[in-house]
Image (cartoon, rainbow, N blue to C red; front, side, top):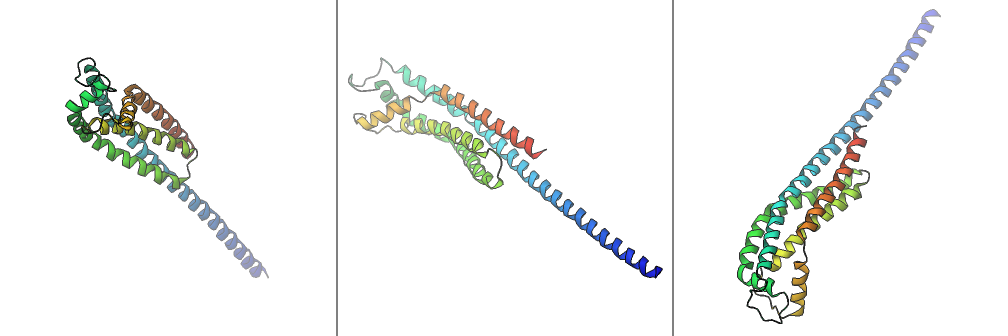
Length: 210
């Protein structure tokens, strides 16, 4: 009888130990999965943060060339040979004389920015699968960063085209639009979107590392 009871207790203990081991293994597996998930999120945020930082830095050159081009246009005020009734004659004079070389020059400089922008957009799209809280804040910041790039790209695409019909109202409307591109607005936008992204990233890191 005693041996029978001992065997029962041993069997019960083995069952309890088995259940306990299974519970510990489940907890360990769950912890491991959470750690893997957190690691992937952190790797993604690190890469996206570095890419956005590189994008903003790479925009400094094109912004400087935009400023130079605007100054160059202003220099033609009062000394151009365009008809008196032409709109934006100083811009037209600048484009005819220096537009192609200026446009070609900036296009080469924008190549690096374009590559970084493509990587940034790819990462932003990839990030949607992680389900990070407030991810729309990151997406909106990156959309507005791209807006800054497009402003400069649009400006130099017109500046570099010497063969437009300057008497065409639509051409003049487009010219007026790109002449309104303001380097200071672009700088301010880059600063603001960088702040917005860093706020998102800080909140995301904080939650992941809890």
